Length: 502
Image (cartoon, rainbow, N blue to C red):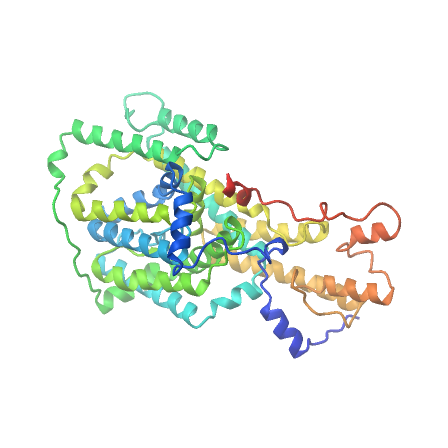
């Protein structure tokens, strides 16, 4: 009969101080990003990355930005001038604060037909709650209680969702020939751009995003001229305007769309983003309090001035990283371009944006999403324990499948946590049956497996055959073969992070 014993106060404090997402090989790594007040260090780092590849990476998230920007502007929910101006301003702000290409992208669930006041109300409500959770450090508990496989499942599920959206963009003009074919936007161009991205996949110095984007701009300008629409593009000084939602608009917008956006912002724009930044930039540990703070500031200011609601996102960071961005320099470039376009052309820029080939946007979004999915490979903190890796993989699959199946980040997170809890209870019961006094969660696992094995090692007893957490050690002790060497026991190299130095 299994019996439970409560951990001591010291054990609880030690458990809460441990970061459950940090891989062992990252514990002692120095932070590669100088703090924002180290201007010389930041300038030196940007100078090292002053390449076309860095500027190309700034365009890695336009597959998400442009379609939502066009949709919200056409239906009158947001001002194109304000969205471009504040989007650029927030790009520059986040680049300065974080020092990495921390993207600024639209809130994806707020794309239905809303008035400007309702859209602003939804963005303000979501941002206020996110800001509160970050300021009170309640989200800090996420890194202490949410297992790594759940976070990786969120990233994998987001990858599949973004891939689907990329395919949908390509399918808008999915023809190779026929009367309805558009010379500037069809499957021929989609296939050509897809092959081009694949050909230079391992040659990250080629600014492929810039090539595809400039080709799309040329096609959009050609179509604008062919339809004699350049007269509708007005260059001049354009300004933002105040948009204050009424109490009814605030309530309607928040209840209709804000509640659905809230779990997406918390899980994808904060939790998954923080984990992805650690993965792509080893040694860099972004604060979720800072991330929630910038999300709050962006919308508590911009939404009152006609801008569409903005947030961060793991997909945007993965996209910019995939196409070459490594520093805040890419965000400075993108932010300056947005501000200039918004102030000089304003709402009239929509005439040109409507002709930008959706096939190019879809391919860029699809390939950027693949980069996000790649980081899910390192889903377990137990690379040499087959049973634990299997359990972690099940947690990852349940989280990702539920997120995609229900199209809801909150439900994916909930089912993933339930699955992880079920496996934890199984291991807890097993450990308490074998060694009732060894119930202390440890740093690497947050479970009782390692503690039980350490107790058995000290007492000279052998762990039960059902637990294979220390199978290599048992094999070595039994003389069946050499134990794992320092090379064999090293964690699997993270290919995504390794490409950062290329």
